[in-house]
Amino acid sequence: MLASLKVEDLGYELYSDRSMEAARAFGIAFQLDAEAVKRYEGFGIDLEAAAGRAHHQLPVPSVFLVGKGGEILWVYSNEDYRVRPENEALLEAARKFVPEKRP
Image (cartoon, rainbow, N blue to C red; front, top):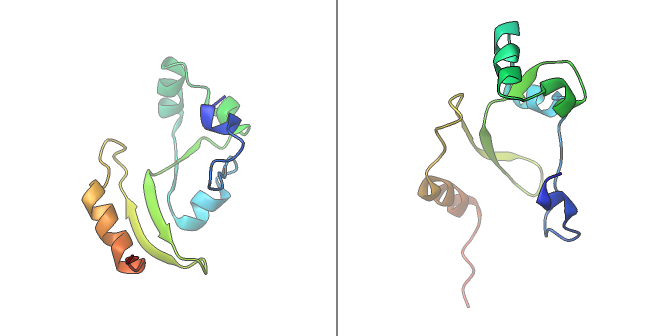
């Protein structure tokens, strides 16, 4: 079990998308072929056990900035899980939508 799942008050809500419904709705789900599933198994990763389903789908690594009203303000997605947005790019995007608090 992830350590964060044991923490009572994270200060934010943690969600899971085992069915991949949200990932499909966001357009970030991709289907693994049989060869890829076997590769994961070779690494000791049981996708069906992890998801509780046999859909053999994974999400494209993505970051979404979502407004209070649920509108998507900014998206970063990259199929290459090794490539992530630079911290400064994420902060710059967030600053466009969150006014700075002045003392």
